Amino acid sequence: MMPKCHKTCLVVIPLLLHVLCLQTHGNGFSRQPSRQLIFTPHKRSDSDPQQVHISLVGEDHMRVSWITNDKHSESLVEYGTKKGKYSTKSTGEHTSYHYFLYKSGKIHHVVIGPLQPNTIYYYRCGGSGPEFSFKTPPPKLPIEFVIVGDLGQTEWTESTLKHVDSKDYDVFLLPGDLSYADTHQPLWDSFGRLVEPYASRRPWMVTEGNHEIETFPIIQPQPFKAYNARWPMPYKESGSTSNLYYSFEVASTRIIMLGSYTHFDAHSPQYKWLQNDLSKIDRKRTPWVIALLHAPWYNTNEAHQGEAEDMRQAMEDLLYEARVDLVFAGHVHAYERFTRIYDNEADSCGPLYVTIGDGGNREGLALRFTKPPSPLSLYREPSFGHGRLRIVNETHAHWSWHRNNDTDAFVADGVWIESLSSFKACWDAHGQQVAHEEL
Image 1 (tube, rainbow, N blue to C red):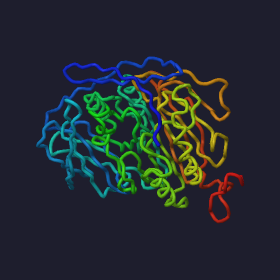
Image 2: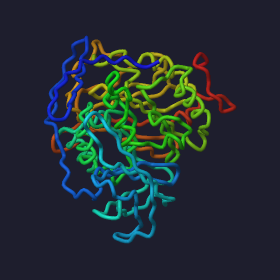
Image 3: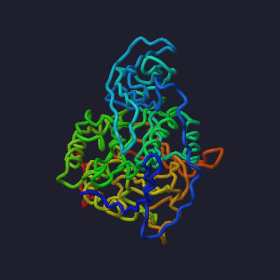
Image 4: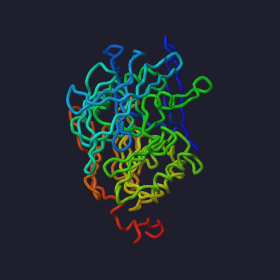
């Protein structure tokens, strides 16, 4: 089963076929206009790397991805721990794709490692061009994640990324809707260049949103063509068969990235993978478990009401029984934090739900929340911003939401969170989950 998505498509055909899919909604909610779209041009040579970004692979490896216009450029990364001195090199693979009249550049993916934790590495892609650097995550807690959904490439996006960059962090998590290219493929290239200064220095771990689908019946039936080619994630390492859902572990924390726009019913590969993945987690070794997906299961905004209800009904029991600590979503262009929930009721052993679809998209904000407010919703605000989850130790973490306040990011919401692995009321004497009806 897959979620419903209602769209009206406006087709404009200049020299390059350009199709913009505009979301429409029967409930008629309004959005504050976003700031101007930013198109980031290519200013390097055809052989130089552009759109460089990195992602975690396994315990001690990193995937370096980039694009060149020169089809003869080598898929090679040279790297080391000193500026300008590359003691190690690795080769990888490359791909490309067509989309109507558009043909991508040569897309390179090279996995490097093993790498030391909490270490700065300097690297060069393809044997030429500028030097980049990144820092590997720490081997143990504390660790800090930045979480931003529905990022896009507007002036608000630029503001969000500058606010994110004003304070250090370890891993960037993005629960869907990256470029808002919406079939206009040059916008994927522009997005890659816009985020390169940030995504080349810290690992960006992403999952897909509805704006990554990019299909047309008969003439372009394959979904996620650009997304899968440009942003491969470590799905094979987690036993998944699809780039649309996967998991990874870093610093005593399991991150589970779910796919809102692929099958999720009890007979689906995603459901069976999730069931198996959760069963392998040892909460003594991995005290924190966090899930990300695009369409929120809980939402009191008038936008996108009920769109993920089928997925919630299919998968919520799995997350609850595994005592997942937090679930982050995007899709709704606003911020909202809920209490711990299971099956539409407050439950101290359920996940804490957060909607953070406010990164800077071109569609503007979803301004209207339902009234009266639900007692399950503890904070809600239609503003652009970003979130930070600092996991301090095995038992406690701090979540904060930073509103974009023009020059400065203002901390508008924050809460301390206790890990469910340390909450004895949720476990019996044998370390097994206490059933919902026994609480």
